[in-house]
Length: 556
Image (cartoon, rainbow, N blue to C red; front, side, top):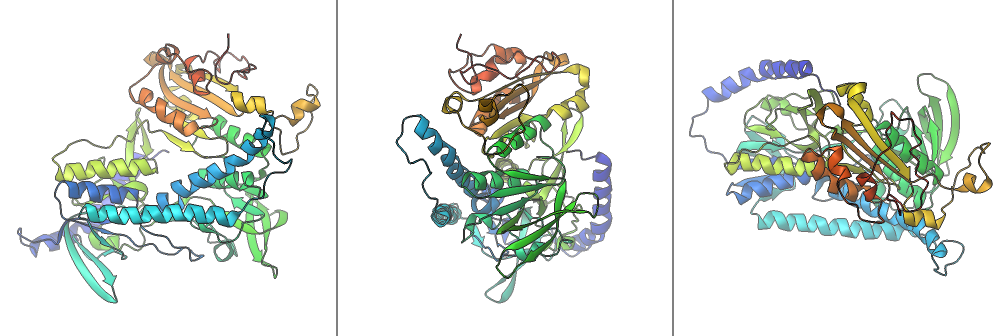
């Protein structure tokens, strides 16, 4: 998370040196009465770009929006709406929902439904068609929305030809337009390793999985990011033999205990993990299958070799800024392609702004420095507030702190604020109190779900214990003692974690303390009510695994 001010100062200095001559030249050759084609041009038709364009138009600004999807290496394309709608949040959530139906159908027999002992067959093609039909409906709605907002839409690849000028190709002819203000909102694309033979030629990413025409079959997911674990999770639940190759840790940047809890549940649900090893080469066999050789991280030792039907990379994303010709506008980027901006989303060029995943904001939170989170609602809000400041005489800035988010693995993870590790680092061990509980949802516990992996039998475990799923819920509040136990970190692993975290996000945003949580009356029997009565601390050393049978609450 750390983003030192020294790096930011150096980048800003480079901006000034590289662009100073360009601005002087423009100012000398341009009259103060220069006319622009548009008040605002937005480059990028994702969540942030669309929100900024429509909001600006609502204030009476003349707005144009450019959006163009460069095909993935596997030639996957999509429509207007950006990553979230086409190859991110929306199709991911729909496939996550489809995956959740598998264990629920197994539960149904315990709850009295007369189903066959084997689950019904699964039709991948039907799932993909349903998901893509919904996505295409949203693409159409976005185009209609731009038209209704009187935003001019160009389905073209835009690039800078000057600080105020955009060039693009339309019907074989290059055209140019000028705007008083420009917002860059191009988002990011999945990263591929350049040094792994066969990676770019034969593998897919999240750009491809949601429209994959044939069932993925036996699948290797490379990486332990939230995208990788979400996809591996729903593939396992849909019945595909799925393995995850993990370099070091799960969900880097998230709370360690929560991330490890997700992995524990995924493993018990049948997902396989290869730890501390990554593909060193990928070969396509005459059968069309992929032979993957695994190399131990930090050495050249080949530790395994296995054949898969599909290999998917989920090892991070890179800002999609390389083709914008930013240098012609006086802008340079950081190593990962991101554009450094100030707290008002302004680049070093006063009339050019960047929002969303392609921008990097130095967020000062609790006297520490962070990067802005790469989240759809963050880009939307930042774009709307920016448009308000540019054209609506508004002054509100985007607040990048205490933003809730969720990871949609089979047992979801909702989080707000600091991880336990970051809390100790920022406040010191003596100023932090951690309250926590581990349990299973009432309805899942009563279904007696069983593991799908093999466990080593323990001395104090009977056969029923060995077969049982681990507790599927983890609840944790991280409090700062010196601030009246103000809650600075919220973590929940369990069903519907996204919905639960969204509700509690307002409390943390308003500065809730542990006493505020304790004074809240829970809704019974729910998982979320656990936060109304957390009383076991990490420091106490007491076992925080709840043995009751009422989910997150108590029955007496």
